[in-house]
Image 1: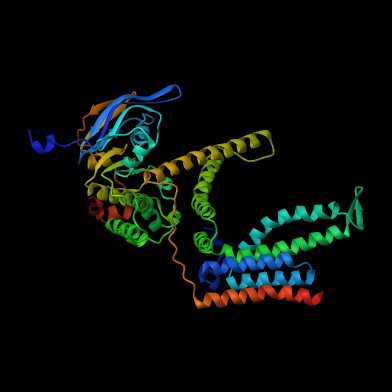
Image 2: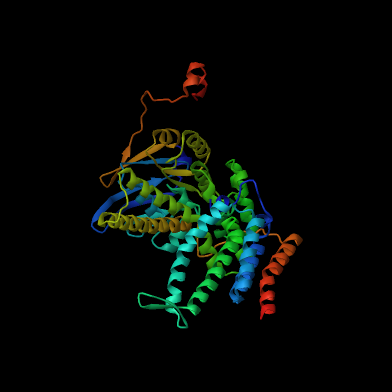
Length: 253
Length: 251
């Protein structure tokens, strides 16, 4: 699925063999550093580190770029809006609106920061089996409800996706082609509505099946994580690397 | 009359059971008993209410009139049905509804844990049931990565791990290929539990059922199962026919 798609099949890096807690903690530290950085050179270095992590993780560039592109569409909106919506010194004027230097610099900072974090998450978290991340988060003491919500999502997102695909195929099989017209929007509305209804019904059946097996509100996870010495070393290494830009920023100031 | 038969009490006993949704009556005045070792086929057209009947039996549908007695205990409220469900296993039509845990072992151990077994005992129980179905190597597999046939076998394991005395099977072979069907049927046939089987598949009924009832027009009637010789279609690879070895594939 997602994990296997992102990583080259033959290549199992240490990021996918370590204790999942290492990945979660390292990603957390990286994100924290990203939030604390404000200077461009330091942020550039952080972005470089995120790329380095991807090399270490052995992610496939093709799929990394595909995911980044999906993310950049969000960022594009921000980069276009922010210069015009922040007060400050006028940079240029367009259609009577003034873009500010402060806004532009803020947009660039956010762009660098967000890309660095997303790349790091791809290298550290996305290459893992989602289930093992759930175990890791549980072992780190995340709330049980959150863990079970996550595990259920992992379990059923594929089932939902398949259902969506089946409905889509059934539409295609009857020569449906999306266009920008009323028919398309109405059909998509029905598709989504049908998906929602079916999901509700499936959720009901799942609860029924759980009740049949004596479900009384408590769920159990069997954790078999083992923290090794190499995990400590990996976490230490990754944390030190992530801290370098922060130290450098202190030096720049 | 054989005395050992006359003292047997029914495991499940249903009297004048009726279910209706809003205005439409699904079935009306349904009565039957299920005795130990019996395998009752529940037959009927699509939408006749077979699945609804099974769901109502174990209290998953609380909009009903009539009397349901399980193991000598009248069941009316959720609490009573909870006790009943510990002894009655239900194999769902869609195994994706039944398997919700990340890994197979966790899923099979879920029922035993709910029965109050310790984590270790539940795991032992789960492994033992998986072994008995020949699925032991699937213990650490992730449930959503299994094939349809594997999912159905694991779903059966999750039910059997609770050591039920009655099995309710809702279209057990639905969506399975020939070999997965045969495998599942062979295991089901080897079980000692009383069963109620809903199926449109003739081979399932032929293999499992000891008697049959027909749900039709909202009424339950006794049905007679009889055989007649029939022709059926077999599909073989062309080169196997040419080599004359396709006869080995008939079993």
